[in-house]
Image (cartoon, rainbow over all chains, first blue to last red; front, side, top):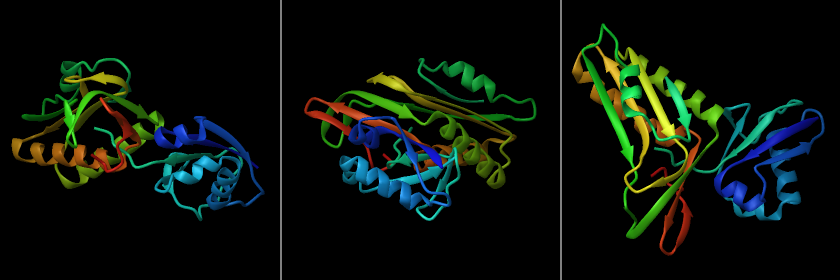
Length: 80
Length: 136
């Protein structure tokens, strides 16, 4: 399956892109997407604290992914 | 009204969007860019958003506030891009029938915005740039 990873702020600065497409096995979970990011973009490993969102809802590393999902890496927020 | 905008915020428009005939109080929070942070002189801020999710989370927060207080209407505008000292980063206007709950509800909304809404600020000071990471 294919998913799109969206990166923001420090995450985007480290990876160098604001969007990355990943191909994952069927029934993959978020952790597998993160593992692939860590492999393909070693600087991403420097981001130690972040939340996960899948299709704009907060999720976690065990959340199952589906084809076409949008996974967002959410570093600590600082709006307002 | 919930907007994420790269334009300067029209405060009156946001405040007026919260008016309701059955409400006698509108409490307004305006967040502005301060010239100092953590002992450093700040020259500007840069805000970035995940806009679709930011709008969704702001609506979620408004739903929470409506469960806790008799909130009848809320208008929120948050700006992104490069902001100078004194620029307005966020405006929140909350309408309630009577004034007492309007203060608490408005405070709740800005406090929650700083916890869960996917918007980030980078501080540009004379000695460098830093993404803020402690919900400040």
